[in-house]
Image (cartoon, rainbow, N blue to C red):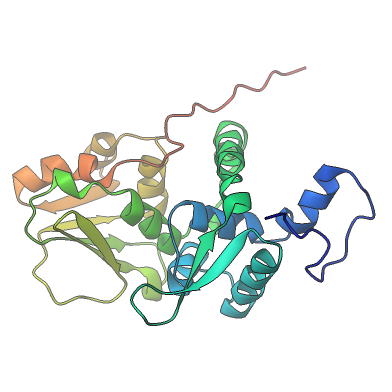
Length: 240
């Protein structure tokens, strides 16, 4: 199915160049991040929104309509019989290498420019949740509670529940017994997740504190994993 460029109700660049035509869809604010969520496996509206928590739900709905109209995304009835799901079409799936190359470029060239405004506990925990490796923990339910000492009250506490090869993220106390508690500041855990600092070093320096059984504490770094872009070293800029 051909992508329906120019039929999505947006003002174009007035150029026949394929880069211009693609940019009419892909260069809209938030659109690359919505595609990132779809590429990473999110299909339900609320799942996609958890990856872009600062985006209004109304704007997300509008962007998804644009992507559907353009032929990059297909809206289907959910397999559960309740609600709808969003899935990439062939045209949308072909963007996956481009999305990851954009992330690799960002990790190499602009990662060091992060400011306090770039730090988001919601996104960090959602990213950790979808990349966590539950096989590193017992198959029984294991609960890891996180407390960000410098986050607003509404985003200060999070719970990851690992059970039977699945990991769920809770913004409200799920009521289960907590096996591990991780306390620290948002920049510290973000730096660990991005591969800029080592987990053990942050604990040794006092920036992070982990409380719980020793065997689970030892498994925690492997269970959390790292960002897909953690292995990319920042580029060294040549000075004139």
